[in-house]
Image (tube, rainbow over all chains, first blue to last red; front, side):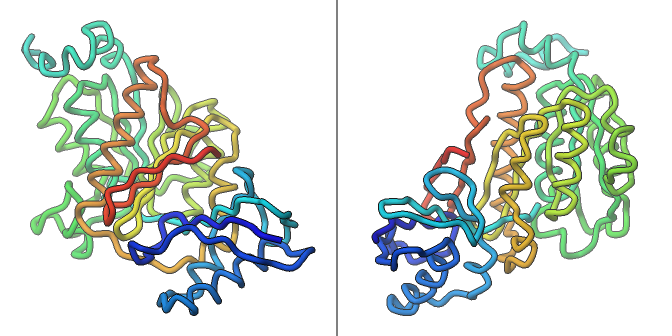
Length: 85
Length: 225
């Protein structure tokens, strides 16, 4: 299945766009995060893996947990937590 | 009070809205990077009463961004310095300084009599405690947070649990990205604008929305939450 992944407030290169990922049936949110790590490696993006592992996730504009299932056509929003003041 | 004091608020704000603001009481929790600017803006625009809360003192790491800090104030209580500055800026404002950490135990007392709360804290646990106490007081909360070149702002309706969803337990281990001087100023201004809209009875743009600020690309993106 294919899902669209959008990254919010990650310090990514300016030309790094939203990504379409191919994942096996039965995948969950955590599988998307793992696939994103591989995507960053493929695109030579240097990033602390904890930025992804600690991210907040929404699936189709609904809050999601790492164990929640995903489906073909879902839009996954991955948000880097910010807590500074 | 000089009759011209608030003349430059208008016509962006109507005379009636300026009068409304002078009847309102806002609590700003956190007097650091975000809080310093928020308190400054709210004092200058003419909020009737401000309660400013911070249990911390200024240290050298604050000097790069915190408006209320300077080299002569290292070791001074942030809330007390905030209150003193507000009194010098606008003696119309009734100012209360609370030099305590905001907690579940003292929060209800601190927020008594307030009309609106602004989140200018710097850690997830305290933000979630603040949102819980706001829910108990049935108060709206204007949330803002920064990290590196980025910021975020949203308006939290009482009891909506937005901050619990925005910050799942794993978020507490997120890597830090620093807080350069320009980021809190932008984020705080947006929080203050939303606060003023809420107080005036205007429609807020960020209820049910989360605004992301990217100062690298100058993109402002709102998502539904």
